[in-house]
Each structure stands twice: as structure tokens, then as C-alpha cells.
Image (cartoon, rainbow, N blue to C red; front, side):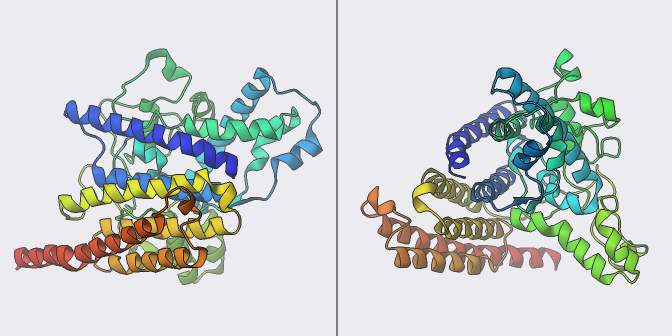
Amino acid sequence: MEEYGKILVIAMPAFLLLIVIEKAYGFFRGNDTAPLMDTVSSLSSGITNAVKDVLGISISILTYDWMVSKVAIFTIENTVLTYLIAFFVIDFYGYWTHRWSHQINIFWNKHAIHHSSEEFNLSCALRQSISSFVNLFTFLLIPAAFLGVPATVIAIVLPLHLFLQFWYHTKHIGKMGFLEKIIVTPSHHRVHHAINKEYLDKNHGQIFIFWDKWFGTFQEELKEVPAVYGITRPAQTWNPIKINFQHLWLLMQDAWRAENWKDKFTIWFKPTGWRPKGFEEKYPVHKIDDVYAFEKYNPKHSKFLTYYSIVQLLITLGFVSYLFAHIGTIGLPTIFIYGMFIFITIYSLTELMDTNPNAYFFELYRLLLGFGIVFFYGDWFGLNSLFLFSNYAVGFYFLTSFGFSYYFSTYEFAGFRSASKSINY
């Protein structure tokens, strides 16, 4: 946990800088692909995923260490070749877990968040799951275990492999010549994120594209078919925590309503989107029928709320960076209280971005939790040792945030609703 947290302290500013560069490039070229609220939502999702991973809130049914101890036929040193083998096997593992996440109902729940943005930009790469608590697919790493690749090598290569999937989430890079035949490029991944019928469930590769060509899931980007992004059952929220569990909630409802006991059990493992017969008419769910004629999610709000959301996101990144940098000294179980605070922060902020008139209630919960932490521990997890007046600064921040949230929820959102009613009248 501590090592991964320190890696993220370095990686987060790098990702943020690249996102800002992409935003500026698109703005000055007249092709801005990163709307601010969508970007804040994506970064919020990245924060929740990073906190979950650093806190280790997941388990593996089958551990890689155990596989190595049982099936390894060699003992190999940590050479360059060892790392190349690990990278290749991890990419094979990534292809199949990615493909099954698209093709099996229950596994789609953990991946839908990644596709939930109706834009395609670097920030949407950070939309990663918090709803996956059990890793069932470690067995796909058995080729590496068979060859005796040490668990320490796998632990190093896994985050590197993940970070290398960031760069190709952009519309500003066209096709890349001969590289299109070897690696996943922005063109390949634009196809993967598209909801056009020509592109659905294609290009599952993470680093190497030849898996898709070998296993029949490859699709080239076509000039005559401009990619449209998102998910066919649109999320209709900026809240990443809600998005993470929307599909699971639908499955639970359908399983409960199903009269056929077979449907109750098999719905989880049916192809993604499958519902019992007649449910589309009886229990309709909003679905995009024409990908070229739907309105992207963008609730009416002021520019002030947009800028406020950006400031809150940057402050939250500060809180997260402090957690990751001091996770060893904060210690167990206190880090989980800190993690809960971050999750409530993200939930409160994104409910405000959704123009929920009750958003200030979530900010009130955060205010009370924040004051409770300072009162119980005496300061903000040791921050007083770095900043003498930190208690006053943190307290002022919580009070100010609640004041702004109350203003937006009670006055600004009410004004928009009144204006909407007047127009409808």
C-alpha cells in the first residue's frame, strides 16, 4: 500500500499536467475535447479508484504467489527478459479480463465507469472501477508463474502496464502508420470506446493490438463512421460512485423481479445487457437508440459552479496526496477513516455538479466528519507538525465549503428550476 501510494504521489501531477496540456492544445486548435465538468468527473473517479487501490480494498481468490509455489518449473533471476515475459503475460491477462468485462453482465458493472464519459480525452482514462472487490482472473497469469517469474516483478510491472494505457485516450492523434499493426493506438482505442454498432465490443487489447487480430475482436477506425462515445444506457450523472453501481443495481432489480428462477440465477452470467423476456417493456431503462441523435449529459449550471468544482477538485487532490505521502505514519485503521472522508468528499462534490438541490446535506456530513476527525485526533492526521495553524485552516475550509454548497443548492439551483418552469409555461 505504502509503496503504491508513493508512486501515485509522483504519477498524479504528471497525469494532471498532460490533461492540462491536452485541454490547452484543443482550445487553441479550436477542437476542445475536454469539457470542464466532464474532466472534473473523470478526475474524481480516478481519485476514488486510487484511494481504493492504495487502501487495498480487494482480495484475490487465487494469489500469484501461491501459483508460483505450486507450478513453477524454473527459478529465474530479475533480468530484462524476466520483465519482458511479465509484461507480455500481463497484457494477455489484460486482454481477456477486459473482453469478459464487456461480454458478461456481472463483470460489465466494474468496467462501465471507464466508458461512462460521453467524451474521449486523457482524463477519461482515469475513470476506473471501485466496484471490483474480488479478483477472479489471477489464473490467467499462470504462464508467468509456470516460468517462475517472481511475484515482485509482477508487482512492479502491473502498475507500469496500467499507466501505459493512459496516453492513447485522445482524439488529437491520428493513425500512426506501421505501429497500428503492433500496439494499441488512439485510433484503435477510439473504436473501443465508441457505441456505434460497427464498433461495439471491439479492440480489447491494452498494449498490444495483435490479441484482437488473433482472437477476432479487431475493428479499424473508419472515416465514414465517426465514433460516438459513452455507454448505450447513459449514466446521466457526474457522480462516479453512483456510476460504479448503476449496472449492478439494475441486475439486482431484474433478478428480484424475475418470476423464472432460472433467470434469477443466470442473468448475472448472460451477455452484457441481457434482461428477462418482456422486461424492456415492463421495466423500461433509458437506452440510446440513435447514436447520432442524443443529447449529452450537461445539466444547466453557472460558470461559477464550474470554477468552484475545479478548485474543490484541486483541494481534494491535496488531501489525497497528503494521505498517499503519509500513509505509513497515519497507519491502520486510521487510513480507512481518511479514505471514507475522501469518498464522501467526491460524492458531495459530484452531487453538487449534478445540481442536486439536496447536495448541501452531503456537504454537511463531510463537515461533521471533518470536525469529528480534528476533535478526536487533535489535528488533521498529524498536519500540525508541518503547519502550525492547520486546524484553523482545515476548519475554515470545511465551513466555507458548506456555505458555498448551501448557496448553490438553495439559491442557484432553485433559480434554474424556476426559469425552466417559466419557459415551459
